[in-house]
Length: 84
Image 1 (cartoon, helix red, strand yellow):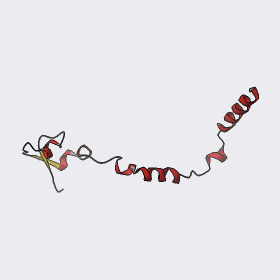
Image 2 (image 1 turned 60 degrees about the vertical axis):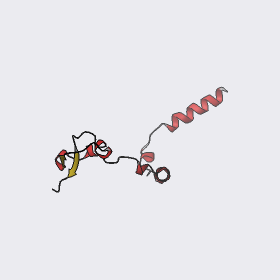
Image 3 (image 1 turned 120 degrees about the horizontal axis):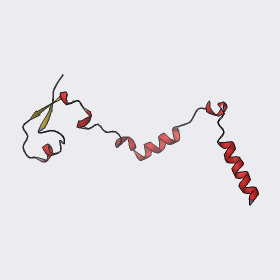
Image 4 (image 1 turned 45 degrees about the vertical axis):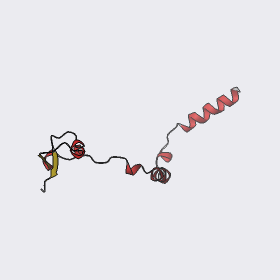
């Protein structure tokens, strides 16, 4: 058993040594891109929200108590997009 432990330690030590030859090898990221595509992460990640846009692009108008107006968090009333 000691021999197995020593052999494993030697392999781990050698695997952790960084060389210029290994650093220059290009990485193939296709497998991770395919996995992300299968899980469709791009549909959920980093969706823009109203908080991502500058406040100068919006004007505040009167809003009644509807669920659509309640969905606009962080603003006093309904929001209209102003053409710049």
